[in-house]
Length: 300
Ligand code: NAP
Image 1 (cartoon, rainbow, N blue to C red):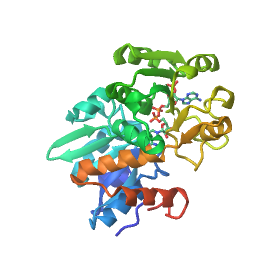
Image 2 (cartoon, protein in one colour; image 1 turned 30 degrees about the vertical axis):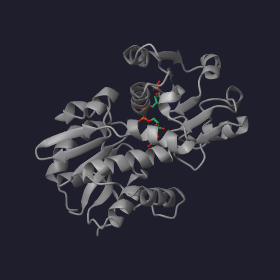
Image 3 (cartoon, rainbow, N blue to C red; image 1 turned 120 degrees about the horizontal axis):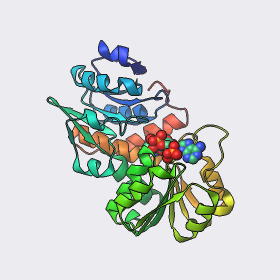
Image 4 (cartoon, helix red, strand yellow; image 1 turned 60 degrees about the horizontal axis):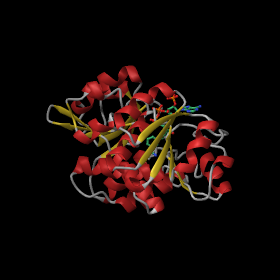
């Protein structure tokens, strides 16, 4: 078994790793935790295939999507910045992914490349697991609703039937058309302290889908004084065990969770699409926890 590492387009052009049949494509991707959970699952299921990281830059995506099935890949995940850019490159899109406007999972089937989105259903499962509530009953504020993850989450909340969806984004022009598309329950607001102070009292759940808090030393995307103990705070970021938004939530007395549960559930759903069988979710969770706590080497 070759040691999983970070491969790139030049490796894909001359693929020499027959056991590596699944991957995550991104830029950057070197520190992705996805191999840890997928390889733990494949190993536990007694399957010989493994999952690796592929560093693919935006201009390389069309060639990579053509090469992957020829190299023997059965499926891949897509992360920053490929989830929307891949849309013109696929032959078929799952109807649910089409509604979310982004694809994070590809399946190579015969001559076809098929796109799915497991981030949307993944967030519903993650919120239920973390807080014991249903997205469809929550009034929700989504920070960073103009990004790839934020748009998919917002569209999923609308599909679920959430009674109120407040979209917030630094670049307001990106979310105004989205709010119109999602219907009367959605409104677009600026990413400013004044706007957040006005709208936070009328929501139950806050989801951070910005990248604010990912890099060491960054502040919380919402200051502590705007948060209340009754709020549920979900940060899609999973870098570090506790994110700056979670620290702010704790200081205000609010419950919070980081994005590991989203990573886990979207990953389990992708694996089920590829394998057509139930994913061993507790083994995947264990693989992830070992990775983030440093017990599983970054190369695995
Ligand atoms: P993206 O498409 O690049 O979107 C980034 C978002 O962050 C945009 O809304 C952007 O606003 C906002 N943003 C960036 N810097 C900002 C700043 N300084 N102030 C305010 N807003 C800022 O990225 P993505 O793929 O959606 O990922 C976004 C986050 O979700 C990342 O932290 C990622 O780790 C997380 N995520 C986690 C999972 C998981 O499994 N847990 C899955 C997917 C994504 P503008 O539109 O104004 O630029």
